Length: 237
Image 1 (cartoon, rainbow, N blue to C red):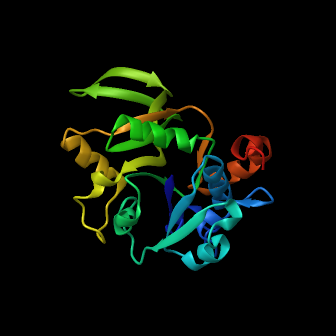
Image 2: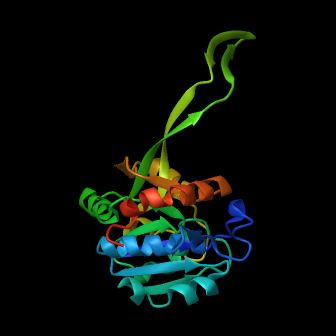
Image 3: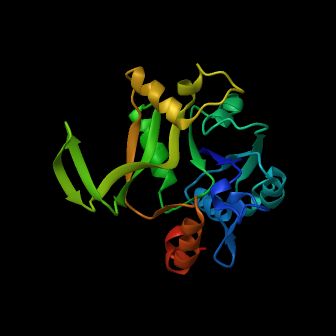
């Protein structure tokens, strides 16, 4: 099994933590970086190979990770010289990948079973499988519905429920064959293209632990919770 880890972003929303460190290398707890945890999990789930798509401060990631032997994996690299979106870096290395593979953001903390997700993707013959999570958003205002200048409905501080993408995907090589390597391609564009073609993505419904380390508040929460969730994230480590 092969995973492509997207680790080339500048982590602008996480500044100042990412001023001198790429986001995947910011520390979680006293011993690990985010990327440490991700690679350990992939190894535990049977992934033997990974490609790191690097860009911003990529030499630091390459120096830190090396050939992947520390995690019992074989790791290579794809350099992103200019921003290519979520899926664009995958197009550049498509010929080196197996027919089905995992793609994931390098800043995700979760106890998702990556192996089970990829197996479901392969067995379902879907062009793309998206790991999804139920997220609640509290609206701190009274919400009005209006029509023809009149208020027709009112809800005080509602809680909205959404299914969101976790930043982890099962992908098939055939799905990306029509796209030109070297051109930007976002996850949103790919999903919209698949919907328009009548070939919708599949869902991997997940209800465990998930935190996207995108903002300082998320990062602070991850560190505050890490002692409690370490056993869940790093079984046996």
